[in-house]
Length: 288
Length: 271
Image 1 (cartoon, chains in turn blue, purple):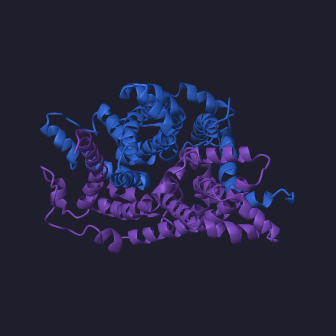
Image 2 (cartoon, chains in turn red, blue):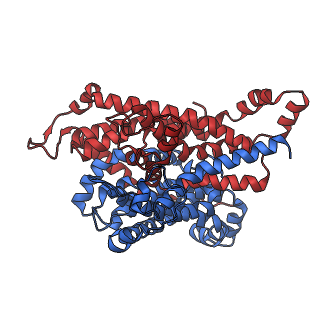
Image 3 (cartoon, chains in turn cyan, green):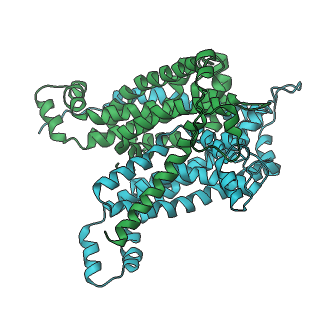
């Protein structure tokens, strides 16, 4: 069949026009600001300081704290959500269709809820004055106070994140499970493999890719978490749940240190871009 | 019934309880009088109903905030869907040089931390007059919604046989009229589902809205944190506003559940 050859560039124009200014202009502008000492509330003039703001990062204990806590939080999220998510995916996999679709609907609810409302909900649940969770735990003899205990605040953010995002991990892994050819499982069963052997040697190797995609998406999203944690703990007690984006927010909107805040933003952005590169390769299924 | 089946029902019951209880708790908090919110032990089944919705929505400005949220989200849908449709068609049907780069760029936009953009955006918006306008947020939400919509729609267009395009081409249709006469009618439900998803994610956004609006274009989600005041937290009213934010998004989620996962993973996983 004869084909008309042309380059349909115009199809991409609206995308480029809308996405370009909202992503590239702020990025370039942030690099520009990050080279200046620019504190809105300070009477000192705005001066060019070169890469000083970037050097400052290495000596900033608060930044190291935010990065470290953020990493611990993100890795914990990935581990917890992969474990529960895999369990739920296996549960859904072998389920009758009516019960299964009910469970799917249940799992979709957290995914669509506004993150800030999720923060509000868990603030109501965990608050030491009004929440049912501290009350029930106190009856069991456990003192749970997210306002004073660093560990409790961390656990609360972790639990909230697991509530919000475990369904996504479940659905990604379920897509992998559903793609496994039935014959492979039958062969394994006929050859006398036990359930745990089938899980270990047949199922897990076949859904490695889905595990990687789910873990990476969750890792990146947990690293840039803001809304829910901001609502639930505000970064406290102290700076114990002050993850990366919360630190940027505090730096910029309470201390008005725009130059240094921008430098931090650029570094955060590069960390994320690095990970999205890995994700991109995985999704495309390409080789390195 | 076998033991395995019983276990299954137990697990589903646990998941349902864990998912629904916080929502239930917020809804009943929005209906409790002040005294019962603070009572120990907590009231799990409130009998005295108080209307915490009245003050924020009728006497205060939250109804306006809700309208703002809806206007901004609808405006964003109107910007995103046509552009995403064109781009998705392009990605699906034509071999375009650099399309891989555009994909990577879009992926980065979706994954970038919003907090990283607030400094430059705050300065740009206050200087260009976009600060505290509906249009400002409509444009900005393309940042995460456009990649999402493009890849959900690309998946849907990929599923339409290419022969149909070729037939239309032979009959004399150009690229745009093929899209209009062949592809769009066949997309039907996935187009609607994508629009709903875009609406939900625009409606849900908090950080940009709270930094880039003041009073005129303030959205309901960014107004939520105003209940945390120096003298304490207005739990009942906060729960009331939270409930109003939550209900439409949950309804939308149940309607389009098949597409949520495809949207959230930029098409890496088919729903």
